[in-house]
Image (cartoon, rainbow, N blue to C red; front, side, top):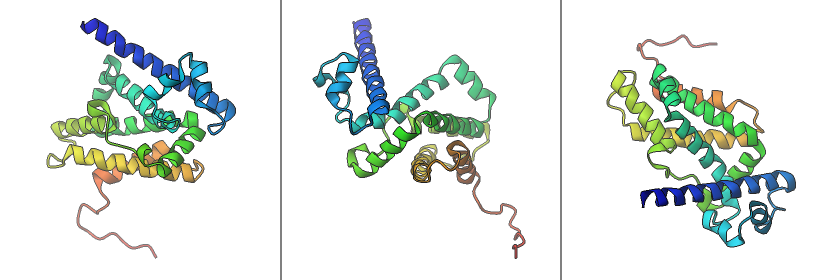
Length: 214
């Protein structure tokens, strides 16, 4: 029974992936607005009704770009090689690597990412949510913050989930700016700076005043 259930889940994932690949291929070839759902389902070899079982609207395909990348990234971080790499680094270094890898993955589809951000800002149901569970964006960040607390790298009084929520908000903020500024800066490097400011702060820790530049 368990095997049958697992196979059914795998088939659904394969079908969703096939629809996504067909849609994105057509978006690149014809443009988002010019591509019809019927063309996507024809390319994927499924009925039109099947499309709406996985994506409520055509715009939801765009939202899936980030979700899909995060899912793959979380999977790679939780396999043997990923876990070994993470434990060879400090928690903060692993957090920066996570964000940089995520940002670098978006570089392959800059135009579609910009379109997704634009649609998300205009359509309420496409706005980012905190879904994703243990291995979503917030889940991965929470795990890394908690590991840093156990190792003494991060203050024990900090709420890992709150930090994860704040970092996710800052990530989307920087993503929107990145798209609006025609990708004029490196998103991965900017996110690393965000981590430094969030975890290390901006105050002068030794209490002495720094000289003011004139």
